[in-house]
Image 1 (cartoon, rainbow, N blue to C red):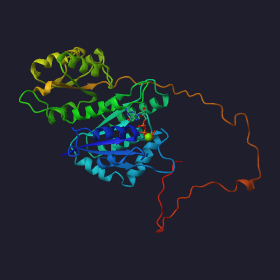
Image 2: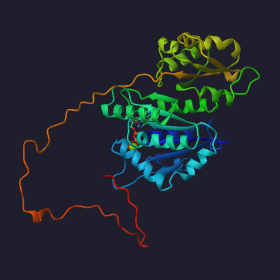
Image 3: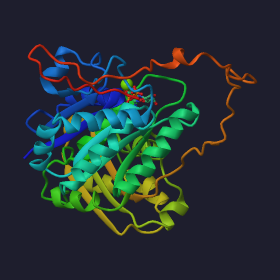
Image 4: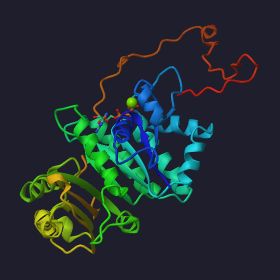
Length: 364
Ligand SMILES: Nc1nc2c(ncn2[C@@H]2O[C@H](COP(=O)(O)OP(=O)(O)OP(=O)(O)O)[C@@H](O)[C@H]2O)c(=O)[nH]1
Ligand SMILES: [Mg+2]
């Protein structure tokens, strides 16, 4: 059985492309759908691997960063059957189905809740991976983000993952690769078989069923000390929000650690000791995958911490200071009634060449 990833909007589509390049996530293991209101993001390579569903709707491509419009476009195409095949595939996929999108835009952020709800209503476990704006991004990004998180909670999403975009750069390659890593880890593609402690699908099922936010990171280095520093840096200061010692006191956490090195059973404690020091109350449960393998001198480690609180959001002052209107201080003058007899209407009776009505979506 395959896993399924549904990518939304521009950000989602870029991440889908990075996922498509992962040797750990080949076509036989993972089906990928990308849904966006722009088709310019898609090249021939992408089309070969990714099922692209355009939700272009009218002459105004995109959503104008308007979540309601993103949602309306998704629902319109849903009603017309555009996602029937994807939903069928989701029903026959290995759980969980992953949905990846930025929170800040219109198309992906607006489509995310209807996609998740459609899957949940079919009894499918769905985990959203949400790319949040950084704290310096414009208010409109944060308004969209906050609305999305609230609506996901209302829709019944319990387990989820959040990333925070970097400041002062639009180079998304590193963070997109971090998302790819998370996907590899949570789909169980980083755990080699071993006769020692191991993490299997049912262990992952427990970890990913724990309500709350989870993080998943991977690191590699050529010695224990560097591996410890690198994995600790990625957990505490990486693209996924970390947690405070108080958060760990107040949360029921489950952890899953993996290590592959020549002396993995000896290195295990050392590599994760700084991360463990941040978990002040012992986790409810802990899984580990320990592989003794020389691995050509490279050492690799992964961490999942599940059950975390959401973390910081930016509260936006909703008192907008509107500019005075173009007609401020003016009154409408009267005019002869014959001039208002004609009113603008939107006709919906366009026909195609066979005489069938053309259904057109219009944003009013
Ligand atoms: N991590 C990451 N963030 C991205 C990427 N592309 C855009 N973003 C961020 O995503 C947010 C904008 O969302 P988009 O995904 O472009 O929006 P959309 O879903 O296409 O919606 P529209 O507003 O209709 O274009 C901003 O915060 C960008 O910084 C990407 O490839 N990776
Ligand atoms: Mg877009």
